[in-house]
Amino acid sequence: MQLDIRHAANSIWIMKLTLAFSLVLALGLQCAFSATSTGTQPSSKPVPQAKADTAVKKQRPIPFHGTIAAVNPTARTITVGKRTFVLTTETKFYKESKDTPGTIKDAMVGSRVTGSYIKSSEGKLLARSVYFKGTVAATASETGKKTSPDRK
Image (cartoon, rainbow, N blue to C red; front, side, top):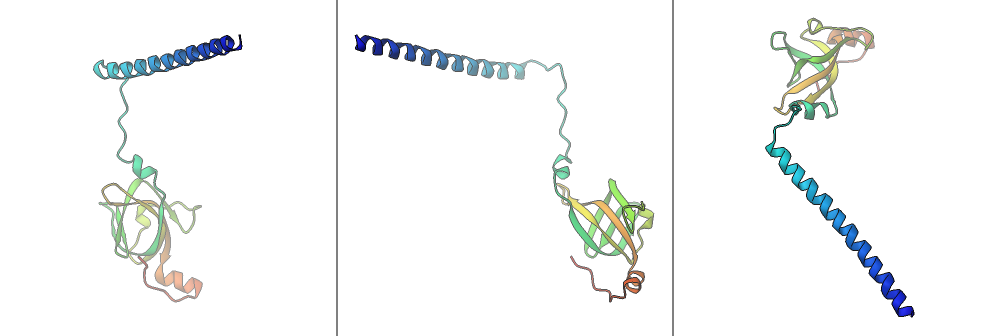
């Protein structure tokens, strides 16, 4: 008698397992067929194109500081040491602190500058923020320190 009960319990367990497996298989096949069918039919909603700058926006900004060696307002670039930074429309300019907004016109050769940048997919250095700190002579006389050469 016990053998019949165990046999019946095992049969029920096997039927439940078979039913669950069949459902999973059916759902998997339905997903596979719906994925292939959407590839042949035109979509009613346009798929937004990923911007090239999405990888750029996910990067963490890298700090920089030094003395401005060259300014090109038409190309919107500044050269600090040996690196040239591109000033984009997203670049934020400040004079001395975050409280005083600045512009590209505040960039002067020989003035101290700090800020942050990210690298674009083309290898360009895109400035995110730029702080104009005044000329090297003025900065040194205010702090009483000697000036040091730019770092990389």
